[in-house]
Length: 399
Ligand code: PLP
Image (tube, rainbow, N blue to C red; front, side, top):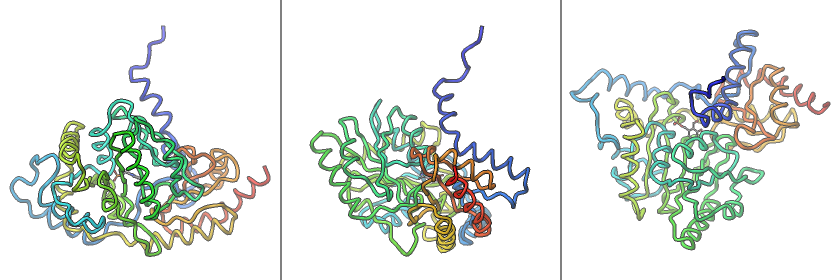
């Protein structure tokens, strides 16, 4: 008699569903072994390749070599007061919200940790979280972690918000709309007018349904915006806004797991919300954000990797894709292209693999017919893929 699997059926299904990026990762290892590291053009991973700014390394060395008593101890679950105060000053600047204080900040294990404490704090069973599709694939898992349901709503073809579709998707179970700007996987940056219109929809719906609908802004790429554009402030627009972000991308330190959540100082349910998220930090097992990293990032809050390097790569990549005839929207931030595929995305990604080019099918982001190309790789890798991108699209046209 065959035994049922020892682990949960849900996790078995999730492992299957979450496998696109992992599949490409494994494929990459195989191809690199077979053909040599420098012959494979790997655009599958959003893992920043630039080194952290010198100021980060210096602050880390300074703090690590000067241990004070108690630096490795447990601390309040929301983080160190001195760090939160400095972070609040940065949020005040980014979000034009001068009245924000350390008491509205919670230090977290990255933006991922931030999203998980937010969802744990606000979701009742089967509550819905609307997000524009395509979307960062982990959103579905994070919402599910806390008993909720992710409701993807297709974005417009230029990846701006489809406001009427979002409005139609709101139900009495809607607890939040989750946005991400600059956006993974499309590189979109939402305009202030678009955000104002979205917030008006949330205000109207909250009023007519008698529920609070939060706007959650996941913004780890805020400082990676191109052509001098300023990513619009969110907190100044809506008192039921919650920000989550991290230093993973702007300081190139994703492995250090450090970020924060900020709540609007006038949010009507502020104290319960902050209390619930602080407890969530503890009982989800994060306990508190890493102690050493809290102290280090507090010293370098105005530092960032050189965004011009990403912008140069974007421009090079755009010229290669245009020359070959791909249909794409130019990313305004982050480090991803999300072009249309000339044939079904999974098939096309496999044609690219024949050229030793690794991309992730749009299917993995809830948006078939596209592919994600991450440009956190050297310009030589992008340049090296020029001929392969051309040949693959030619082959697809002949199919
Ligand atoms: N949100 C988006 C849109 C991301 O792309 C990522 C990471 O790639 C995260 C959240 C998670 O960020 P972190 O690694 O800082 O937790």
